[in-house]
Length: 400
Image (cartoon, rainbow, N blue to C red; front, top):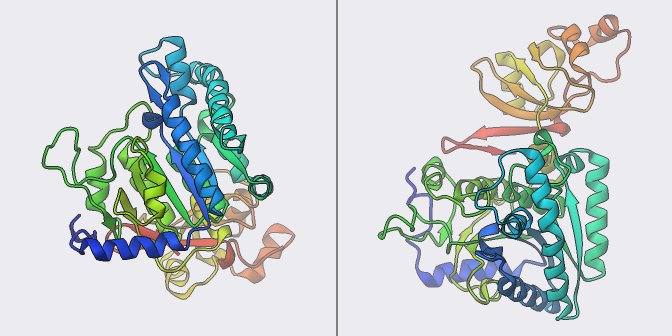
């Protein structure tokens, strides 16, 4: 499938407008992600843009929308404040720059929302906060409470304390996780270009904006690699990966320019701006979204052909008899990747036994678990309810 075949670019403008209207008419909770390229300028934070976004978000709230803001800008703000030209490459200096920039960022949000009789609340997260199920639910409860109070949650990665292995990667990925966490109806990703193009518009004058995407394929992912970001680390490739995550789970996403006036108003009016990525019809449950898109795999379980088929085709759990090898050291409840005999990763799941115990029971029947371990809490190494299957539809894997 080519890039053009994966899009609805050939549909009429009237058809696209109807699709957009149908999508936005059903939105009651929205995650808005704003990138560094939108929030910063040569002399530091782009306060004018922050004020405009606060006005637009406040207007949506006055219309009954719930809005969660995922904001970049802390490191970029700190860089400008310190007179830095290049982003620090090591963790301590990144954290120091974020510590300098974050207070200014929140101050501007607080002042801007106050002008519209709205309050903002700062939430700083690390990936570890969302990988722990209890803290994941606590974060959701906190954000829900803020939304009930009609306060705007402003979420960013806790750059000042996070270590590399607990990073989200970039705020595009964080925005996808927050979208899943809060069961949002749409993710609006505001960046410094008008949407997704078939090639870099900064280099190619004949680049075409793709207004509507029905399915993300490998051609799109390849095209996105050539479209860089600005001050942040999340270029267009990161945004396409994010779109794939949220649309796979049944949630639409828009990429649009946060530098354009009234961009949120125009989107919610159903105007033909930016690029709208349509979701798959079936919406994935919140727990499976958490397993598929939030947790970080800590090990690998290699299975035989029969086990791979039973899981993929028949919706079965993973039993000890189908396991041929275990890689890594992990405990009970950890997320692991299942790999078939051909070396293809085809599922992610939560284990009922730790790595050392799985090695002791791999290849045996369930009635032998007690004999091998001295106890048996479960027949399954991974129960089907805790498994997310990756289905390769020839245009890239999707979850189910």
